Amino acid sequence: MLLDAVKLSPNSASRQKVLGETAHKNGDLGVAQAAFERTIKISEFSSNKNPTAYVALAKVLSESDAPDEALKVLTRTKGVFKDSTDVAIQAAAVESAVYRKTGQQDLSDAAMAQAEQLLASQPGKLSQDAAIEVAQAMLALGRKDQAFGLMRDLVKNHHEDTRLSNKVEELFEQAQMGTEGRSLIAESREEVIQINNQGVMLAKQGQFAEGARLLRTALQNLPGSEVVMMNLCGLLIGQMRAEGKSDALMTEVLELLERVRELNPMNDKVRQYMSALYPSGGRSPG
Image 1 (spheres, rainbow, N blue to C red):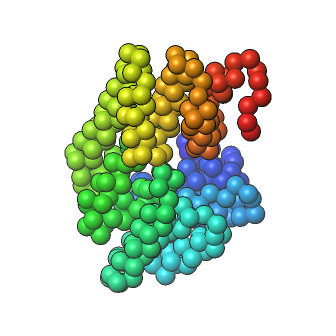
Image 2 (image 1 turned 90 degrees about the vertical axis):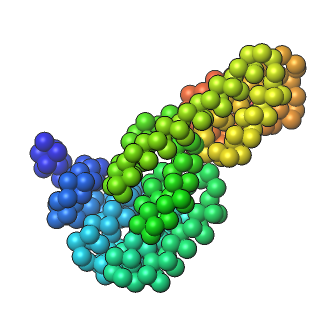
């Protein structure tokens, strides 16, 4: 059915990409390679180039015993997306895996070190795809604790994202660590749920300072958690309704809302909370 859809729309980059991903998952490397190459060609001069297709093509070539071609694609990827640290991290992680497969352990370690260095410069800003690529490379290198730590943080930062949890579970299944992976996902999600519930409960009891302190601490550990940010915003708005407006709290809420807007421009609660801050339709910043 997917092939039929692609035949009907052969110049659809998104459909070619899905075909490539499906074929890759099913072990059909020839179809996967052709689909990813077509994806890249279709969007070559578009502003909507997808780095995932480039990285996936490199992985397929490596699995097809064409490491030199895989490395060429990764070099090209870094050039095309030269302004993206996120893509550089993904490329370095896959480079590490390619070098390891060819027995060049020193180069593999060097590429992984580069990925980790770039990773440290992006706290809370790493994309899901990049985090999963790095974790996969870490597992291949036997760095289980680091991979688990990275995936634990990723799931906690996006604990309501079922699609992501499925991707993480698939990663661990491929590494023959399915049971451990499922436990990690369940425990990580439950931990964040408990923190959020505790913060909400404290706010309902009027213990705003305690609730805010709890959620601020959680946010320090989970800087990419949209849910924690929004819950903290709601708590602080509730505190101002109960105790009166505060310039410091207003500034904090506005900064949090801006962070959420950067992470997810489609978050409807941002607009709702802005309306709560400026109920009379007064001018808001930005």
